[in-house]
Image (tube, rainbow, N blue to C red):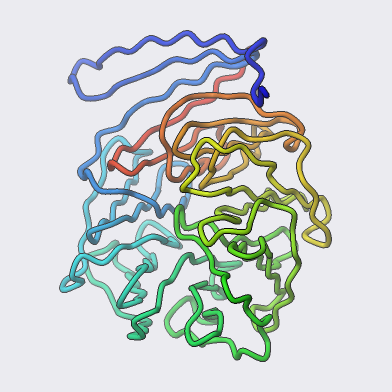
Length: 355
């Protein structure tokens, strides 16, 4: 079965080096637009999975072995930041408030969150969980003060943390206000995007395992669960990424990272999470990221075996590139996006629409 649209896909690939000999560019023409993929200079070779976009120039990245990077010039250069005595923590998720202020969250033991207010010169430990099973997947904020961190189960309880003071302190939500976890049910930290906030200000958490459930809450205190039809059934399967595009539409993707070429139907809500249905078109494999270009009005999803786009809310998907991607975010007011992968590579994708 064919899941892409090869009939309308004309790929012209030209690989060349810039004058400095370090930046690669690939031009790919797809139907009504060109995609220019520029490989940016990266100061690391570690897997990069966390990303937070502040504006069209400022982006924070995080990854394994204490990786924390920041650009203030749309990726032309990157500052490599460090937190003392973090013992090679795996920072899978980050939320940035500005070029000076950000919170990074580690996956694995010990589970920690650090905050900086001076551009990464100094950091404060704002949360720590020393339980050996602690594993934090993602962080998101709905405004400058209210945020959520989602982690895996500890002692049969989902770990959901809430802050109301911009991450200075964090409170674990009582289990009576969180749906009872299934025996095999957790979030995924593949891209730091298993949580999102919709236009109405509602939090959504995507999970996997026995079922592909979505938890939602308007205030972060009381949560409700909905079972969705996205692929599930294995500990490694379920919702890996969920994104609200700001119009009441929310889409989620995932699959099974142990079966990278196994296609699946994303799920979409057209009514701010009240109900979920399968999208009409399949994506071509495991997908760790879904994001939306407000300017271009199209979705892009990606994973280990490449990128795809949809301009019809998932009714059809067009293959864009075979580029291996962990995570990707669009830059505000543009059709450009920053993407990263497991080898520390950083890409600038420029979607140029034809007249």
